[in-house]
Image (cartoon, rainbow, N blue to C red):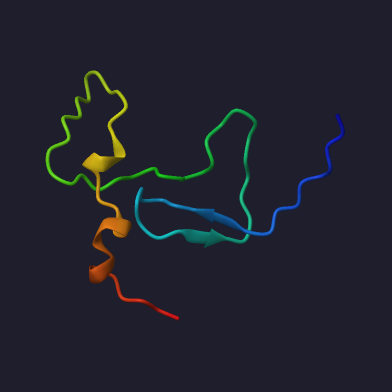
Length: 77
């Protein structure tokens, strides 16, 4: 199997899960690590049941997402 070299055309991170992307000019990534600051924060949409003493995955439906509130977001062209 032959692979062609990858070509990156854009970099972006979503510092707050479900909100707008933040374009990056450069970043440093490490093998096996998360993309820097990607989804580092989230806005809880009502009590989600997070337990800091026993953290575990919580469904994205428990958090704010702009896609569900498009009428509240101005469109900028």
